[in-house]
Length: 492
Image 1 (cartoon, rainbow, N blue to C red):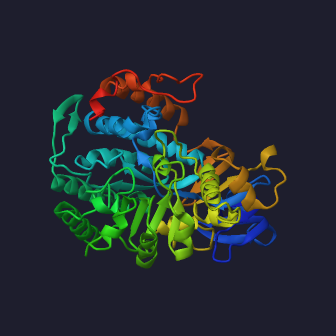
Image 2 (image 1 turned 120 degrees about the vertical axis):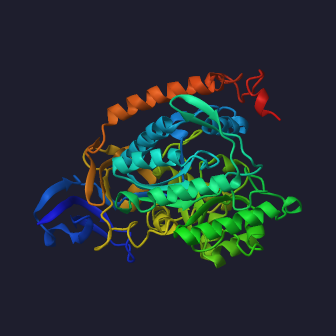
Image 3 (image 1 turned 180 degrees about the vertical axis):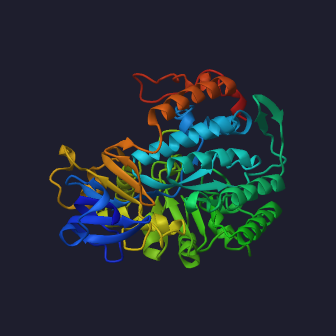
């Protein structure tokens, strides 16, 4: 008998033919999809049945870039984004321990689950922190417990080295500065511990902070400042060697100027095994380099870097590059709800070109499903509803949903009207993780309560309370400003 039957809705397959099947069903056995098609001609019985209740049945959403740690620091220092990165990076590097990373992993997994994101990449910290592999391990264990897929993204931060850090053992802080090689050793330990873990639901990507670490980490680097340094060349060589040795893919941030430099490096971090995030300010030659090398791009339309330059999404797609839409969640001002990001991505590009035909609705959904799966090297297993693929399935919009009524033009409903809160059921690897918005595998209330306690603890330990106070001009003004010295230590 079929293990699981999901029926009573319109199936949007995202398969090669992009079939949309009304009154359809999806059958699952042994964690794999065994039938996708009209309900009348498919299996009628199963050990368990999920009713879509007139809604839409989709492959699980794939968020190809986000961050671990941010979930417990939501909006801290967000009113002063120029200082936010320094505040949270100091917190991650000097005040967090395995309890923090375990609790944050539970919370971020729960948030993604309830938004229908069945696969999510998490960079461990803001600048990735890999000197202590136990931190990434605690985060991965939380995702494994929740039943979701996590791509643990860890690797070396930017120079200079040695990098100051603090490791906490039994509540006692220990100064633990680390070198580039220490960071690589820690990342490689995470790969050994977790890549392919939890029935292959946990994978690891080797993640240096930037593909060219001598460049600006917040936006494009002007041509007259862009030079490959000895450290740049050493990092790319070590990353390539390690990725080959351990059989993992590579993820990193990239901005304008970096792609051009990486193309001149014999070990440059570009290619079909690489996913680069942000890519704002690319030159037209860099668009061509991305496409010609088969490098995938992650575009986060709500990321702070979008305020400084545009990601040339349309040009990348037209050049033949694979582009995924990502959340970059969940801090300082974003969430893991992937669906609103589709609409923002569309508006940004349409406004730039003054052309409402760019970024079609169907393409937007591809960029959160099959294209995002391809960016992670997982499109043979997930990203579409096809017989033989792993059974990652969500339903949304069932029952009383006036904003999604009438329920025709299913793809338009998902992209233009739906939000993560409209997700009803979530299935990963054929296992039901949420039914009717009730998580089944984890105790959601206990996770929220633990997250509140852990956040309070880290705010006190890291002295974050001043960075939670509203700035001058918060109310009744057209702009805000900082007139006190709370950020004095970050101003240099």
